[in-house]
Image (tube, rainbow, N blue to C red; front, side):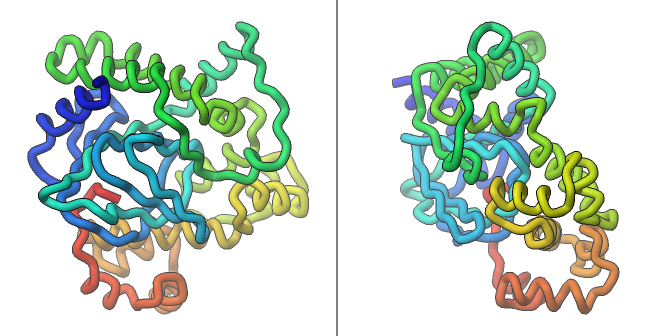
Length: 297
């Protein structure tokens, strides 16, 4: 019943494909009425919840397909490919994208630990996942509904938006992806911090030695731990982030050369060569092949 209410709220506020702001910082609604194959995207720390239809994300060859039974939790910036494989006019996709504020998530994680909800030590599986699918539970569903209901009143949104968003963050940290998210936002996660810094400074020269120093590790230890967390070597990860960001900028209308410079490429020929190696087409060929409603990925 609550999911139906959430769907009705989203459908009533989205009159076109793409994203629609809610007035709450970091919370956006989206709709898709056509199938879109996976295209390059960058997921900043976020949760993506679908209430109608199916969405797909691919990260380093691993495919995540999810619908209204699970939401996607991505607590670190990640270069992905994303699409809407089954959306149509008769069966539209509706969903909500919630950006995860690092400061608030860290505060909540530490408050939970101080209150007795200490993060248990976890080996293996959780530390090698970059994205996690989590089942909708009552806490998440109720908090999301309460958050989206604010959109009916600008005053309610302005006064209660921050508190309701914090309530949703808390539900995420308590839910099935909670341990995974708390690891990423914990004060000691140096890899997550190095990824956040790199993601915010793509146009600047990026040195693996500098990233290792920022994380307080030797180059060898940083390389090993980085690959444990992301399954990619640091150099591969940086390249994927740059190229995916550039592809998104090109799809949004930026020229190829401008997009290349925006993400740190000095040589247009090197950019074209690496773009083709990753996506199988030159940037110009790729642009011609794309028909992407902006914001859906």
